[in-house]
Amino acid sequence: MPDTDNRGAGDRFFPSVAHRSQPFLLKGSSALDWGMQSRLAQIFRPSTGRTVMLAIDHGYFQGPTSGLERVDLSIVPLLPWADALMTTRGMVRSTIPPASRTPIVLRASGGPSVLRELSDEQIAVSMDDAARINASAVAVQVFIGGEFETQSVHNMTRLVDQGQRHGIPVLAVTAVGRELTRDARYLRLATRICAELGAHIVKTYHCDQDFDTVTAACPVPLVMAGGKKLPELDALTMAYRAIEEGAAGVDMGRNIFQSHDPAAMIRAVGAVVHEHTKPQAAYDHYVRPSPEHATREDG
Ligand code: R5P
Image (tube, rainbow, N blue to C red):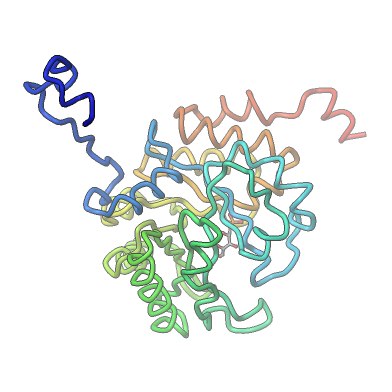
């Protein structure tokens, strides 16, 4: 018989204290199952509700991108500063140390290379394999307005169905074709469709005007995509604005790993996202090359 049956231990039952249930505070996620919430809490730091996701999945359609030629040398040392790593199962199994504490967001769509029509993607990973890898989420490209729009939406909805069974969230990446304008009107359309059809996280680009309407209209956490390499201060400013305007974090690749100092840059992004450090202060503290470094580079 368990010793706590002894009424003498009654003080430890606190019968007059109501059971404490902690609410799950991530936007739009309070009704999800425990496993799904647990995985989301691995990606979004519970202390801030935000994430700095490092995107290095570029190779799935464009091969060895500049800065990702040797992921073992350039990216693995950055893992301690990333709240999550967005990558492919090939890179996970070949290169990412299983002892890493950084959660994996697994690229789960693919097919065409940069030489073909990019929207013609299919699901590229089974949910069983995502579970085997211990992925904290899977990521799928959604091409609203693209040639294979319906197929890409269908990829996402099938992954959502499978993810619901396994407790694995789906990150929908809104891919914007060259012929489309990245304005708030388009981004509201694309992100809302992804959320309505079940995505648990949505990734999209920042826009100069009315980005706050994009985050407001999206009922689940929205993370800002990085895009092509910008000067570091500009990238930090974009991240700062996105957070101010309601983003739950960033999912940046080239603006981190193509920086002259990727370790400094990811820490600066972390300060902006989690500590609300102003972009100039984050740049000055982490990124600005020391006079000695600048002289060597100039010379
Ligand atoms: C595709 O569009 C992918 O998700 C990318 O490979 C990646 O996430 C892009 O990251 P960034 O634009 O910040 O380099």
